Length: 145
Image (cartoon, rainbow, N blue to C red):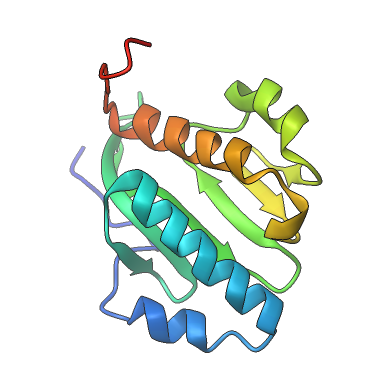
């Protein structure tokens, strides 16, 4: 089966302008901070995916059905109700870290946080790093882990 186009794909929309346009000041600041954090952790530039997702890096997926394509490796969307973080390797593997994170909810591959000020940034950074590395199969053996 050929690679299919996803409904959500990279666009040329300006990430900084998108984040600056968020009406709620706290959500705007949280979005800008999360954007900086994800860029720092991944080493990738922020790219708009569709009209409301800020993504970092890409990975290629292939399902048993034969469907395959490319999608963001990690990203977020500053939605009105919460910041939605997209962890493409799923949230189940972060059970221990999520216990230490602070207030949040989860979906299959989504982590929902109302305010960054309510969560442990060190734990959040760890989850972002692990998810990005897992999804992109990046291995850093510098620290011997």
